[in-house]
Length: 425
Image 1 (cartoon, rainbow, N blue to C red):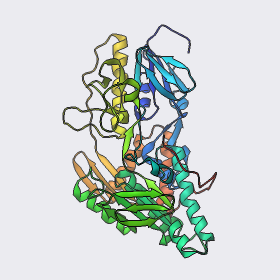
Image 2: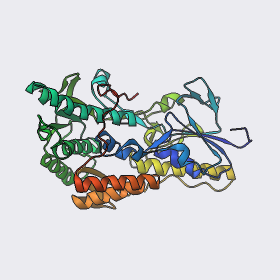
Image 3: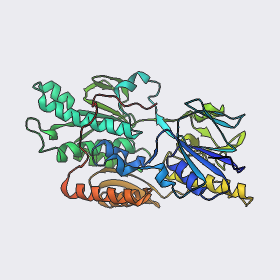
Image 4: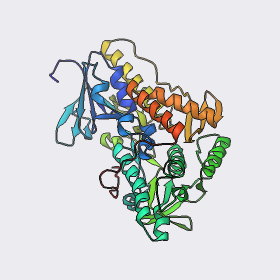
């Protein structure tokens, strides 16, 4: 992009927040650069369906250049940001380059946290990227293939035991979907093993699943998972994870795969800027999402800790990031044009939801508590509408419809090296 004399806005991260900011700056009197270490926008809420062979990567990811094709003032740059020189107003890139900015929007997201137990990381798979999802899918399918060839009953039991740590929405969704994969999709596909005998264990250190939901909905989620054959273990923390499984409380569980769906921490934007961070590492921001002491820098989504005065920061949800991104984009467009800027950011909470399995979900929408098929239908419609392009909506709708009527999953190919561990830097 040639210098134009216009203000330079750099957006780091092409998730929900970064993409929303870029779209809000479409046609503004600024040169906008969107940086991401991948070339695509990922619809993370459905990432677990790629991990469990329900969807393919192309169903939930779209190239950033395609999404921003109609924005001539927005440049897309595939690069990895490694820091910020706030005094020079430059973003540092992994290849040694520096990218100057007049305004900076940090939308770098979050990574999984092992609560200081980083020795567990090589033995537990996480779910944050397409690479992670494909590695989990390979590990799950490979476990069944290896069990089919084994003559050792103890090895078969271990291979067909899948442990999920974390009883939030991701953990609940993973547990329910893996159980359905084993008990319906794969049930008739093998000669010597019965996939329906697979053991799925969901471990939650707290007293109930889906702690952010109403207790009655948490209880329904527990019952629905147990109906699918999932073992739900509450109130006991993980003590150890190794190459052969995990220890929960005093119980040892030998497992073919351990999936970590517990706590998260913000990526290191606060450290880049040398500013105050919340307990999870997120940047504490002002009412307009700017960083204290750096009015030209904004943090949004999972990397930001935004408290509107309630004493509780906004949750790390896609709607929060999208609304913050759109807000900051409008604010900067107005500031550059000399127009009145919008008042402080205000999050509009349209509800929360979690799917448990086929025709089972829980949801809170506009104060209304739903469960079962109605909640699942609402979940399906909301997620389809949140997807960024029509192609993805159509593809996902067709796959979901086919899977609902046939119990089939179309993305069950094994490629690459199933034993390779996923990473979440």
